[in-house]
Image 1 (cartoon, rainbow, N blue to C red):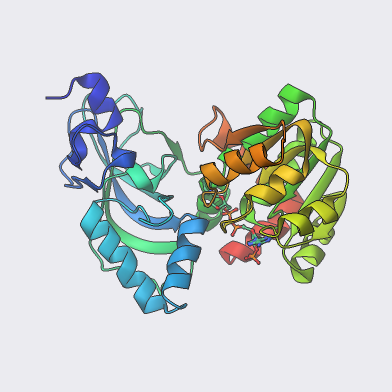
Image 2 (image 1 turned 90 degrees about the horizontal axis):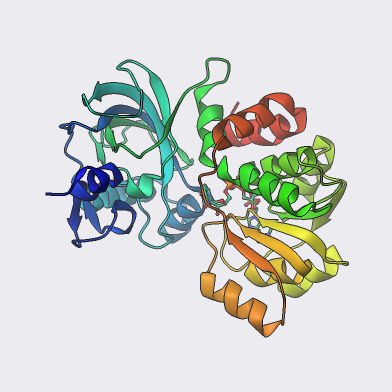
Length: 342
Ligand code: NAP
């Protein structure tokens, strides 16, 4: 029997293989009965991580029904929504409907919450066959149950924002927090955000500005995104380049910058990001499509003395920071709202 520390991490829900934590598990026990230290959420909506959704859509040739079947199969087989190719998950919102007597999370039955731990480690059961989802959006209306462990974090949903917005912002709230922390700690002034017109990208630009950086560059994929980013006023300079083309990224960026933040949802952005970063600078790889070996070996091959950070989805205060940036920045709202249909 696992002890309370192990239970707090969810080890008791791991079915296979033995001895790993839930994130690394192939299969979790998603049974809805709550243990003494667990919380059960009645699920209302999932937010699939952007890299996962893109991979599923592309592998299904854009066929929404096939994407829906793929998600249902993954959840049924794994007891959690973890894309087997990208390894990533997303997060969810719902209503607290059972709280074990020893849960330390401070949640109450009836509260509407967003989970701030990845779906890749959250026991999940879907009971409606995702009948209300067409398989064409990252946000998935869903019914079912999810389980939080004693160390799983959750945020009570704010009353002043639409659920779809809260879900989208909270899913990527680690990016602005990581950006703000690096800029503040290093005193960086110049920052490039790769994938800057996306959700995590625009929040990272706003966070960098608030943390003191004053030469902000947003790199985007095409002219339409460039126009939207320019209109938002979040960046001092907007560049169009394919993030997966390292020489094009380096040529577009020109003089390398103090900090590069990678917020694209496609693989292959590692080398361009390293080339865009000055010696002694920092690259934050928030993208879940990042390859550790491509980043590390690529930097070695370029003799690039850069600090490379994996964008941890958790930083204390990350949820409040991201929601406040959304509330206070018209430019962030202008870029995020169309992506969530607001
Ligand atoms: P998003 O809103 O879809 O933004 C991604 C942006 O990258 C989009 O503007 C996209 O353009 C752009 N892009 C795609 N391919 C590009 C290319 N080749 N060159 C230049 N730009 C390109 O995604 P998001 O929700 O912000 O998520 C971004 C990444 O963060 C994903 O990889 C996701 O998995 C990851 N993530 C990490 C964590 C964590 O804890 N570390 C948590 C959540 C998400 P188009 O829209 O035109 O395709």
